[in-house]
Image 1 (spheres, rainbow, N blue to C red):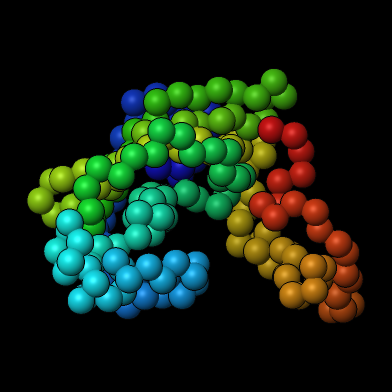
Image 2 (spheres, rainbow, N blue to C red):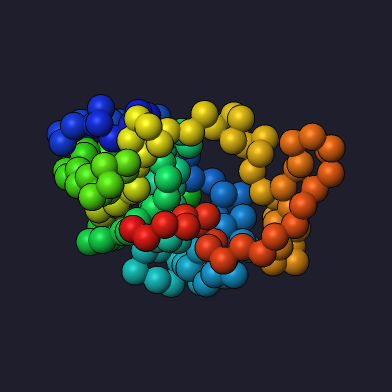
Length: 191
């Protein structure tokens, strides 16, 4: 969906992604990563007694899957700005295959003209055509002058040391310098 600078994006642009199958391993890894170990997602005997009759994937995992399936090219995506009107319409069961459909619904250039807030309406659809999650997601997208040649940027990117500090490779000596960071998303200018 975000595969170019904002000046080339148009309201009404639509994308349909490839599918992803929801597996036991995928759900268990998410449960461990987030510490959301509710038995509805992990315990078949518990889930059998619920309104669903079997285990379902986490809603937050399905929202993350929706965002993960949509192309967000690192040369143009600067950061996530917001999620709005998120709704969980239907459960996602183990073995379901889901794909994302996304449509650009608004583009608002920032006053400096260097980037824009691009708002997309996204839905995650299962193999039966049932919408399982939807929402609006807003992204800060670079203009042509702000696009990053991301392979080179990745080589220069700070690396997290686990101590709340980052280390950045020096351009000449191969050594690293360390500095404190204050923004988790790396966004330093006001939105």
